[in-house]
Length: 227
Image 1: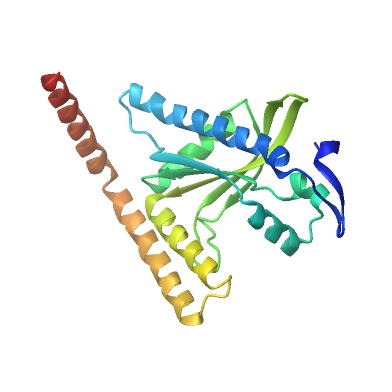
Image 2: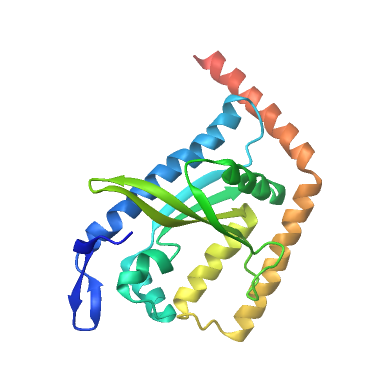
């Protein structure tokens, strides 16, 4: 998996010589996976069916974050590719909790990458209150030097979980990972409130989906009238 020209001697040992070159395949993987995951959503729309995917985002981890995580895990630079699983990260956001598991099932059936690990933080949330489903995949990228297998992380969560996680991430950044106890307590209460919202919305899922179909048809009809 390692390219010999990507690593070199530094004062602290093996280090990244050319970050652009090292991260280029990860950028390519994120771009390709975003297209593929959004394509899954589009197929539902073409069939006028409820899509379990609301939207998809992706990013390559910033260099500073990679180095920080490597230091925390005591990962040498020449092991980054095999030990840091989320350098390439995708996020799939869903309307309902059941949609999360529908997306996971679709990912399991795909033949263009292999799943090497699943982490269900929904049925077993983190102590912080964090909920999401993580799928670690091994994805093949075609480079000028041939095929390269990369690790990527796909996070699947509801809109409510995403709202909570985004704010928790901001607070972690503000407090350098040392969020005050009172704020942690409020975050945990907010996490439970968000999950209660997900549960309540799931109970009226059929009504919501019927309303969305009616709205979509009305919008399509109005668009035809305007053309």
